[in-house]
Length: 344
Image (cartoon, rainbow, N blue to C red; front, side, top):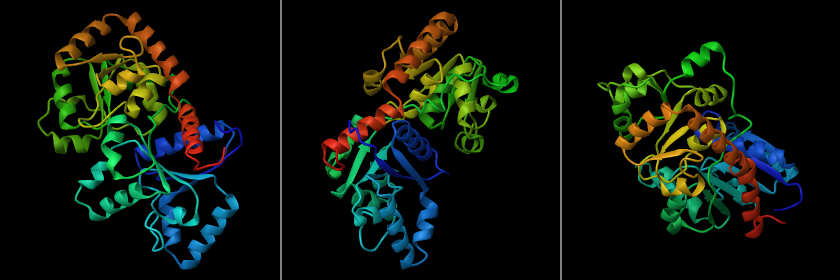
């Protein structure tokens, strides 16, 4: 771990879902570790750079004045198009550029969008860009795309996700036997529908669900999407069980695991070898391996609140000790220093 104070320039896309969580988590972590951080809206910056050749010159001067040790962006969101450099203006200006992927980059190679595919291939082929990927499985699948790829799991932003006391109205909304918060894909719908007879609440985008699953018995269980992260953290704490599910083909753990545990919630998660590397079954969370086992475990733990509380406490303490963005920021700096992208 470098002992000197670093200067980090972070690009973020505020309107996104994963991007602001990841870039916001890293920004807070770097600041907490004593580093200087400048955060810029990537969309506004791109609009500014397109105005005239002078805009790029002025931005370059600003960046040289800030003198970042490295640039950080989520995924390909830092790829600002320039004619001079296919790997972006930051590479052209000579600053180390870091991309963090909390999903599978290969999705963009198969999505049918030629521009997106080119951006991903250019980024992974570049010798100037360091790629951190959240999952070992996904990292292995991307190995043939190019150099400088490293594993760095997702994490908890414990400045946001913590055991909140909700208002009486929000507590009524949050309290239930089982909750699920996130996108309800077909595999998730098929997993959750057999639980319809429980006090179950789904926090998802209602219109998208209705369009995708118009005849599902889960429709009366939908309570809408929660944008506010503090309210979401309160939900995880007040729900007796929060259901976790890894999207097929993706590695783990996803960010929801960290968010639920650091909020003081109790999680039933599908078993995945990567998640089991981080969390111990029936100590930090509880794994289910089939829909039938999920129901049996839900029945058991709903009847044993003391065990739920003990596992929730252990899970939260484990995340705070090992899986915050401060820990990930330190690991990122260690890799960049070891690989000589930044000075120690």
